[in-house]
Image 1 (cartoon, one colour):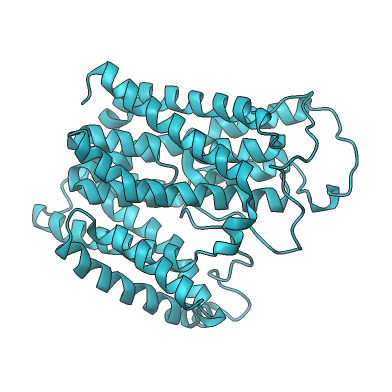
Image 2: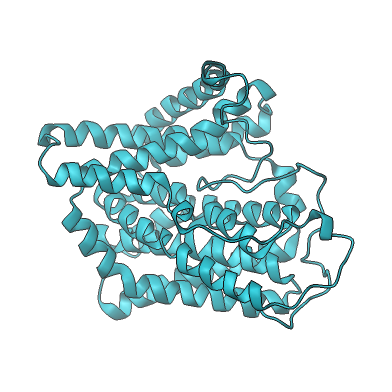
Length: 386
């Protein structure tokens, strides 16, 4: 991943510094990074921020409603996958105007995180503990294989250290949110962040579209597919979309596995911080001004709020405070919220940013995607989980 001696020259896989404000690290939505983050309240006040989100949010909800109908007509595809496909088609056909962007950004992140919290109402703390511990061997070996492959393959593709580190943690842990967490630790350039997030996004979409079909082809059980999606898909949005398309029990299992996997960002960030402190001062270069300064990390900030909310709602359900009759409506609500979020992610697609990533980072992302998928499936087969 990182090393003291490797200061690779900018090869065909290394990015050029982007103009100021061209990209920022996205959170765990799988969408390419955007700048500025207009989904958060500004000086206009809370009411102004809420109103600014309504147009884009309404568009995402409308697309999700159509996608839900299509998903019922085509159960194998499902609403979430239909949502992201429709969103991409709308974005390519009619590029969303600036007035829609705050709502689209909010739907792609905030609505998705809310959906994850709602999913917690269907699980108990005992289930979460059992799933987390049961998936740990597959999770750790898959992550180790991904990080090792990112280091080895990235060097041979001529991709600079920080960019291959970002792609490695994004693929191995939790997509764009892992990239966002690691960026200040290693001091990555903004352009590197944008390219890494864009590369990860391509294979998030590929996983959502192909993994459910692969699961049916391999005749995987709900448990096996949930473990596969939770350990082999990059970020939460794609994990939930792929697993929900395969089946409800698979989605419940995959979410717990993915949330446990997300916690691995804490030791990874701490390890990278230690390596950065040991790294010798880099030679000044023209790109230094575009590089963010490495800084100390706070463990509390690495734990997403929706993980806390998910566990809290599971605790409420464990205490018997969520009526059994409410489970099915809450499940339906969660799936629709996921469809809204993925519709927004599709709307935020910018083909130009994906093309700008170039072939080498994209190739590395594809190879790591295959490594993670093959490792997860192979381990499950060896452990008899199929």
